[in-house]
Image 1: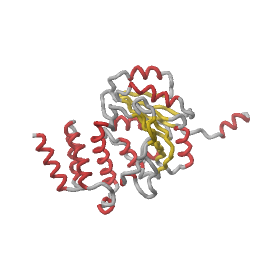
Image 2: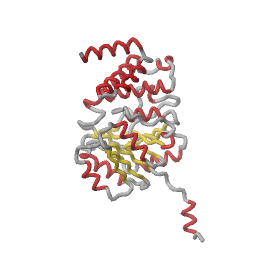
Image 3: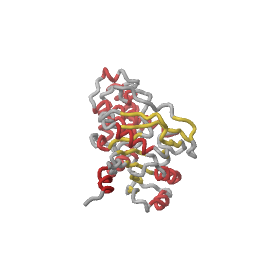
Image 4: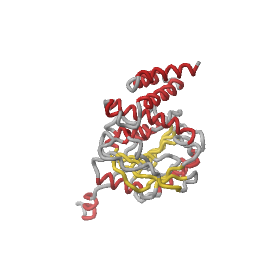
Length: 310
C-alpha cells in the first residue's frame, strides 16, 4: 500500500528538465566561470550538454573538474566541424523539455533557469522565451544592459525588422524545435539567428524585460570585432533563407529594411566561403538561391568574385 506521503509525491507534477547547451571551441579560459554559473542556479532540474568542437586549448582540464557531476554530458567532435554543426549536435543529444544555448565564454544569472521554466509553463504555445542581457567586459563585469534586445511587435517576425532583436538568453521548447528542420550545419556564425527565425514559425515568442545573461566582449568573440562583418553576412543568409522557405512575396520583402542587393551579397559571400572550403555543391546551390533576390546583381557579384581570384 502506498502511504500518504508517497501519494502526495506521486500527485506532485515534476518540473520540466532544462537542457543548457554549450558548444565549445578553445574557450577553456572562460569555461569554468560559465559552468559554475549553471551549477549555482536556484533551479536544480537541469542538464548540461557540452559538445567540444575539437578544441586545442586546455578545455580538457576544465572538463575533468566537472566530470563527477552526472548531469553534465561532454561529447567531443573528432575534428573541427564549425558552430552550426556543433550546436545542432547539442540539441540532438539534449533530453530536456526546454533548451537554451549558453556560449562557453559567457554566464547566466542565478535565477535564469527558474524564470525561463516558469514562463514556458505559463505559456505552453510559446516557442521562444527570451530575455535581455548584460554587456560585459572581458572580466565579465557588466557595463550596461543591451539596448537592441526587446519585445518583437505583435504580428511581426524578427527577421523582417532591424530592431529590436531576439537575443540572450533565448530558450525554446524542444518539441517546437523538432517541428523545424533544425539548425543548419553550414552556418559558422549567426547560428542563433538561423535558429530563432525557424522557431518563430512554430509559435509566438515571449520577451522577459530582465537581464538573465552575462555577454562577455573580448577579442576572440566569434561575432564581434574582426568577425562582425562575416557574422553579418551569415545573418543576411539566414534572413534570405527564411524568405525562400516560407515563399514570402516580393511585395512583403519591400516592406523590410533589407534590399534585394543586400540579401544577394550576403548569400554570395557565404557561397564564396563555402567554395574556398571545398563545399562546391553547397556553394552552387547558394548561388542558384541568390538569383531569386536579383539575377542582375547576382551575376555581377559572381563575375567580380571570379575576377578577384585571377
